Length: 352
Ligand code: GGG
Image 1 (cartoon, rainbow, N blue to C red):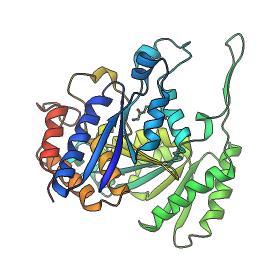
Image 2 (cartoon, rainbow, N blue to C red):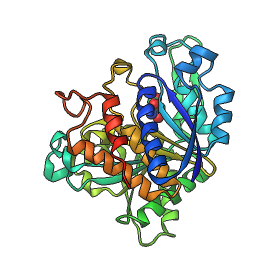
Image 3 (tube, protein in one colour):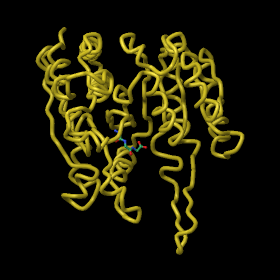
């Protein structure tokens, strides 16, 4: 298969982890006889520094003519330190999601048997954890109108959702649940928010077309608690943008490191794959960042294009690195292996 992949490394540890995922994709090309091409473009702080904007037009153009996008991370303390700055790196990612219509962010959460002892939660609670979060990605408070009063003393962000926006991701989440353990949990705050009550009505209606899937509802505060008390109860979690962002970071604790969780952002035309972690500027250039979340994101990319065996081969190689304790310091403080070592080990163990 031929695939054109746009590489948006972004900021901080982004370039280091994307480089390891590319090594793995190249190993897949060789092992399974595929032809992937890669082209880099700037986004985030790196793009502001060089071009004055977090999403240059040529970056967007490259994404639109590529089959898929592999994204690293975004954000830089340089722009955090000045709260009055008008241009922020994160705007690049948000605009990209909007421009490409990437409305569904899919975040699988699993516990690896070899890492079970690393989890701060009890073994009995987490050992069957295997759920997937469907986070709505182009609506809600992230994209609603933002206001700041002239004197800077009052601010607001509007949380707005339409039936159409809820409908399309709900169908995707139900379809996923149908192929899994047939349970879907909508996480909302319907006791307080009007937008959450709309989510409940729309999801309940869509659910009528999927009678084999059991649908339940959970308030986000309770969901945050249940994820650490009893994560094995979940199969598919469907939720809005902000709740999904927070709950998926929380979920990463179960598996032992946020450096393990990948994601896919899907729309009707484009697809982008990225680790859920941010740019982790404190680790930039130190060769300590965990590349596995980005490598798993590349595995999701392969699966998206129907390359199931190839995706499984990448996952097997990751499992081998975890089993052999060939891991970065976030998973083993005494580890002498860095980002590059781990990437080389995984890429070198991709076999048919
Ligand atoms: N790789 C994900 C990433 O860089 N996240 C940084 C970030 O600020 N994301 C905003 C969001 O996903 O809500």
